[in-house]
Image (cartoon, rainbow, N blue to C red; front, side, top):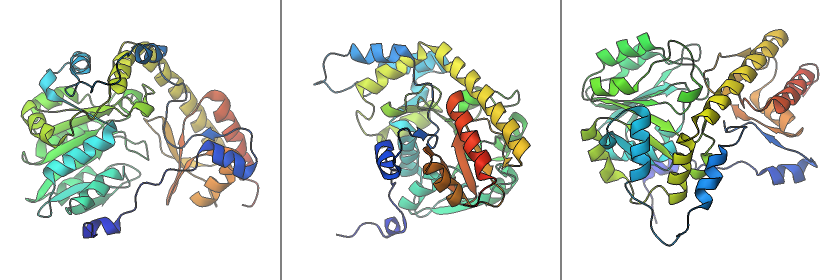
Length: 358
């Protein structure tokens, strides 16, 4: 049986080894996972209470996510028909690609950003135009220059994963004013809650100004609900109505919907997580500066680093054998900002690594 030819150029997502597998392989008692940008503080205690109150598992979930829809609409101050819900933002990226891209179109993105934009464009056999980052940041002028009459989607990950850098308000305003009205600009704000810089753009009001703008957000990160797989998009009602056709029915579970509602009922937990992340992130910067480790200033709950004289593979393996899982990239290492104790232990390992051959 033959699948699409372009799928043969892709690699299926390969989950990393489980913590139990790593423990067994290296004879370790403890594993600290700092590879997937999960919230090290867990999730609100409201969540467990909410999901344990669910009684009937034989009934399909509300395909419209009505209760959650009303809650999110109030939270972000948009109309309910401006929202679409998905099984994490990965599915929403898939929905957008499936609904809009085709072999006759192209899509523009950064080279060095979230890989699912490219992955799904390949599946749809669209032309992919990647614009290199500049000092870890989106090159909006370069991306604008790559747009032509066949361009259907421009992806901006803000803050960018994996570098943590961001497009500020003025840069985004100028960009949106110049993008053709028939090109959809997708702002992936998975790490929105962590982005506390004064000039970080507040994009929801821009949706009313630009029909060709869509904002993506998730409950996986600051809310600590990654296991439930639930995110959402905000856009013009006319766009959302068309995208709903490409969304699978019952794509978000009862558990996920109730967990997200509970998360929104405890924004104090989110704020505390963001504040603790900012404190620990700053301590990492001080450590990196002291020890000559290069890094990008990040607005996420992760930091992208380079260690002089070490490849990303060497750093990854050194830390793995000592109980810490980080995320290697060809150009560096992405480290999730964890809890204080784990961060301190990791810094000690990095300090030791600087003085030994790997």
